[in-house]
Image (cartoon, rainbow, N blue to C red; front, side, top):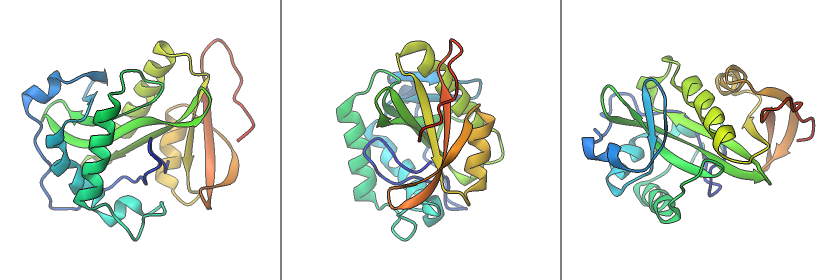
Length: 207
């Protein structure tokens, strides 16, 4: 799971020992994309920059991406958030949002659906290290797929991960995606996964 809506890099880590930014109660009044039992996914706002940079500046975030040696700095993180705010996405066929933990109101990561093929976007999510092992990625992925299929006309959703990225591949399988093969994508090999929309569609074989 490596690209994002503006073809930026992806990952899933946060520097150990850093304190995540606390999201104010007013933040939860932003446009909400969806929520799960434990999480809220909402639009970005400018005061998310400091929290997100803690995630994206960690080189471990980019272990399985082209930016493994080039973690994001504050300028790049700010540009990403401003881009998403300017786009003001309101539908789940194409969006990126901040992931907020309900019980703490903390910003703990990001998720979204990125353009890939017509009516077939690519799923993305990354969470801070303190939130690994809690089932959050699976919880996010399942709800994102469910809500996107229910509220848009997309035909299916792809997931990509480098073959050696076992953790991400397991999450893709847990959220219902099926492995459809490997392919060179953005100058490296990725394992492709796919889930079709409802009404008995078959898993597509083409990648």
